[in-house]
Length: 559
Ligand code: FBP
Image (tube, rainbow, N blue to C red; front, side, top):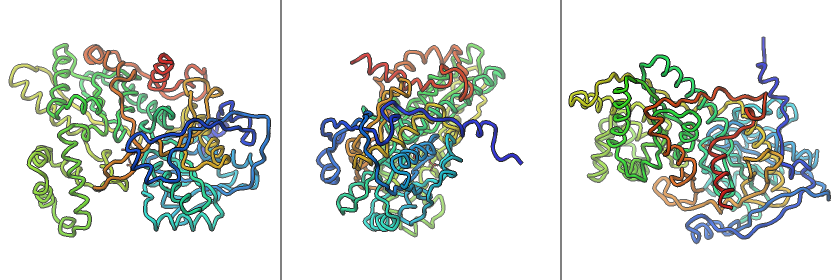
């Protein structure tokens, strides 16, 4: 029986590239501190909540000839939130740095996400375990979870578990919510003199954990390339059969970075951008009209086919629906322990909700198909987010566009055939073999996380910058987590959280879509990116995303 695929065998041998500053060795680093920092918003409240970790400087590492031997330490690591390609390499980089610093150090992996550190579920990594997962996708090495760390009881339990294992540092690999956990834990440990540092690593395929200091979260590169391959294949299928409109929902809980990147890589006929919908205050009806008009124009050209990309988070950005969901979230929070509501049948639930919403919100809620009404009532995730991956926006739009086209047919303004297929691409890309970029980036982030620990820092996010350049020129350092925080309403209460980066409508990436979309809508300018390549010319294997390329080019142009 075969145990590994041929690609798996070859990928295990791949040696990820490190930036020059880290390649000199973990014991040969010097650290430079920048200026003190402020949170992006709500400074007073964030400073008050993070008295011990607020305002620290951004730091950068360079290599030095002076060697500082590392002490033997026990470190714990947690994979948190949704999977993203490259997570295993963050752990491999961390492990290698730890062992290089002092071979007697130990790395523990907490199982099943943040709950592992509370419940004391862990493994100790061995060289064999690490070697079996190098350059592979997935988070299966220790599993992941979405537990929110916020209560005194959870922190006390985490402290006990760390003390029992003599752990003096914890690395949390996660997105905005998971790194909010990291910031909370770091603050609590300092406040209680626990002597345990906490460092985060920026993960999420959504690409929304970024700012001036973090160019991109890991996983975005591989996931978008995977979706672009699939969409390229569908574009070719649509263009061959010429009989279907494919409505494709793409993951990305809030921001549309994934949809925008994939659009630039494939050039489909319609790309909806949630941030634009919100900015232009578009109603659901206006979105449906926009799509139906393009479908009708293509039909006039004899083209009853096409591709529409729909962002996963769209529904929450349509202003009328957004306002309704915000109130619905508050109402559902009050109904959390209401047995009468919990045990009610579906129609009674709808009636209870309707009676608690104001007239405007109740009418928006009522206007939605039953399927969506049900899906909006599903449990929020532990961080209070609507689980948009479970809301079938692609089906909603097919239903509404179809109804609109029937009306147009009656009015004589449409004379085509509309036959639609729906898809949802999300899970298909989250555990792919990491691209060379993600393999290198993740390994560097993990290695660098230990560098931050070695210099005694806590409440920092591992940062590796200058990512459009070859890996050797990347710049390693750290960013205080509090710098990225603001206050947001979750589960009906204002809480400190890391601010998500949304698509900038004045930014260089959206501009490319804006300038081209009329052309792409009617003339078929499809691009077929093909699958990720791991071996071959660097011009094919090491290229990153259009998002990173355009954003970094724009930054350089303003310097
Ligand atoms: P993270 O923010 O934790 O990285 O997760 C992102 C994501 O992949 C979203 O794109 C998606 O909405 C969500 O996870 C799906 O969550 P789940 O894995 O719990 O179904």
